[in-house]
Length: 375
Ligand SMILES: *Cc1c(COP(=O)(O)O)cnc(C)c1O
Image 1 (cartoon, protein in one colour):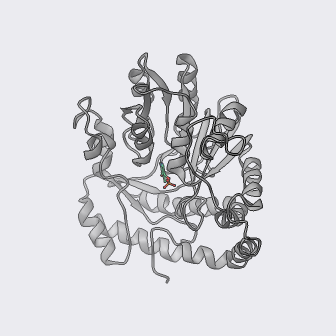
Image 2 (cartoon, helix red, strand yellow):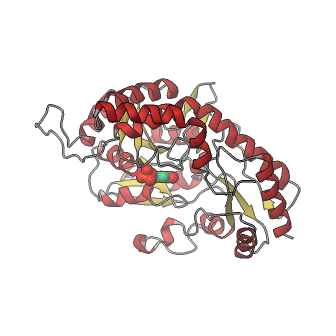
Image 3 (tube, rainbow, N blue to C red):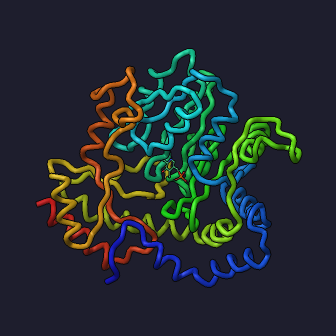
């Protein structure tokens, strides 16, 4: 049995080595490293796959979020609502732009933004909502878009973990993660659902004006060369990363299916005990299982992780500290106890290896070890 890792990019690469290497070699031969044909091709292929009008490739997922917020024309002090249980990048860009992050609690079941908390957090200064589709499952977009419409707010989706997840609205309309709000952002970090061989990201929108602004912002605020209409940044995807992503996009549906099959194996094993709560599935969203995250009930988490590590099984805690309890984000408005669900989750969540290459032998070894470890 191969060594077990949280993410096995080695085995995945072995299977697509010829395709990937050929694409990279073409970029090297062309020397079109920046803004090459492959970036333009990838942009079009992603737009088709996602059924979205505009795809703007950028340097990474954090830049995608920052450029999205820059395009909204907000002013210092404007409030942006985001969940407190997420990766730091979501709130970081809000703070960096001088906007005010307003944190809200999440649902215990789905880990995603709680809708009542969102309603309560809206003030006259609220300008945008940034829902996160955590671990690969959509937040409640139907409610979020409804609330945004009522209050005239922008919705910027942090879809960095949810590439490949689809959402079905009650009228039957289906959209990909990042494609139903005003703007969607994703990351191509190597371990993400669609990962490249370095840093990368993309922004999605169906809005022509926002697309034009974001394209300019990502390129030094420039529309006509050396004429700078906006204050921008320098954020681009390079052609070698685009070559890798073109290949992996062709395999993405298979990759998502492999993650879902691994999750089904885990679910079947872990539903036999009350000490583990398996991921909740919401019927409006498919789950891309960026992470397979369990909740422990009355189990000593560090002892379990040590037990698994000793058997060669890695396990991670996503996330051990909610944003309102992070040192850099200490704020007089928030204190420990304000977001009890996120705080409880940070104490009981536990993520197991999840990737496209898990074999039944590995899954059996992991599930047996976890079941033994919780006794
Ligand atoms: C990965 C991630 C990001 C940032 O993406 P980078 O490409 O690493 O900058 C932002 N938000 C969430 C939820 C993420 O998981």
